[in-house]
Image 1 (cartoon, rainbow, N blue to C red):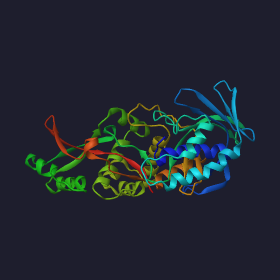
Image 2 (spheres, one colour; image 1 turned 180 degrees about the vertical axis):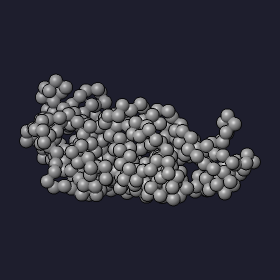
Image 3 (spheres, one colour; image 1 turned 90 degrees about the vertical axis):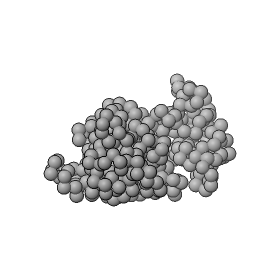
Image 4 (cartoon, rainbow, N blue to C red; image 1 turned 60 degrees about the vertical axis):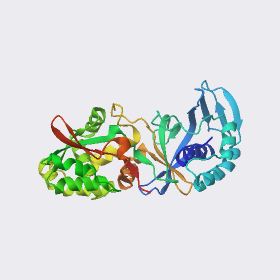
Length: 359
């Protein structure tokens, strides 16, 4: 079985919970909050053969149950714990994009697991029953897993669904080919600057996909305008970190006159967008406004520690997302953006939204 570091990290997080039966909460800097942790009672996995497995963590051993909670197998906890550190080292030190981990595969066989990671169609990567110490109840929750091992994870993946359309005015038609022929690593930035240099104006028109725009408007009816301004500032080379792009929003006189918002207003809206993206909203599907990964985020740190942001430490999670994400440019060819085009007698330019965690 070959997988990349992110995929193997998801399995490692699963093993870590099996062996330790709890995860500590983290603050906005990913540091462990030692007096706040979440107790895991069961983990539920859907396998490739469509068989559901329940891993019961309520005893000293790990009990594997079927969907009707009949006992299939019992495994000593130490059998998992002893191999988990080795598996982490193999993930961290891997030098190829995808790789095998024989120790993990043998453990998968012992645990009756048939796949490394959850289906990509699910927002939650790990479904678990945790004990809520506040309400003294057990709840079934879904968690999304992100890995800090290797490359930084994406929060919002690029696609044609994440394209924003800008209308260009006051640009002479004979300049279009010259601008589109600008190449190089900074070609998008250079093309935008050339549009301005040649007297053109660039104004946000709409989001390419109506579904994504509708989802964004659930956060705030004018939210697409704010994201489009951040996106334009990013591609112009003004900033890439979300915090810096929000500073530019706050400094924009046109926005200030139109909406009379403070920096904290922008922060609030952007944080809600980020957490909505983390826990439920995807650009291609109509969003009902509810979280799909109801438990929160599990993060595998470079140290091997696995921490959790739960709804109970929502403020720390919001701050973590806000202070640790950036805009990033994806392939302009694959996602069809970055060139001037004409449609119905008007001139347009598309920019693409992708958001990644800071390394």
